Length: 360
Image (cartoon, rainbow, N blue to C red; front, side, top):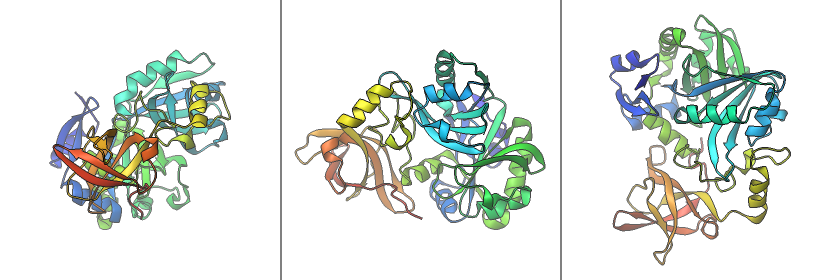
């Protein structure tokens, strides 16, 4: 099993460690609910160094990116990030990712840990352009510093004015006495903050600086379990649960990152699906009785007919109610539609609701 550069730090902090995407990762420290609530109120820091980083350079970098991704990267300016996906040739999704534009000839693609090898092979397979790929996944660490106090808490560590970095924008600058740190106003929690990328050799120095700077603001190390409950409250998709190689971006309500103003892999089929309407849709739902929805639980109609499947579910720490997402036949996707979740032998009433579930 691989280990991040901060593995020893997590063990010293008494983190509960679990295998995740081929890495030994911290799932929790103090407990999911307290870590979750602390991110919503103060700030938490997540080690997400297992994510993959591919740099793409060269005169035809944008042509490659436009071909393999669904969003329109030609609209980006230097210092901007964009959420997008890699469509496959069968209507599904190879991966969802964030791309960063440094210049017209230099981009960074940040991909999911479990998909690093698959994505690398896929992109190289389609690279018929004058563009060079450099897989730096094993050289970079990544911390997500998330929560409403992130700007105030981290300002002392950099000469950059953090309040001026707009959402989905980034700066390459000094941080905690280290150079060439990428500070990105992105995250997976819906509570604001940054994701910072740096070389592995700077990992412990930066971790301790972040913890010290955040001490008076209530910073806590936060594990992957709270990351999952935070993202689910926002209705953010998790690859392998809510999206995969069998789910289309149209079904997954990712039409907003699927731009038909350009040609990309499988664009014609996805455009047809959008025009004709998807047969199923990803929806958010709330349970109206006791129980917790889990991945792969059946979704039923009132006649006990299976109309879909749960892809993510939890007891929401912020809302104190059971929430989930899942695919249902399109006719059951309207807001307030009554549905039922099969939890073991029980049929628990639920209703389709708007996401995000949590509103700050």
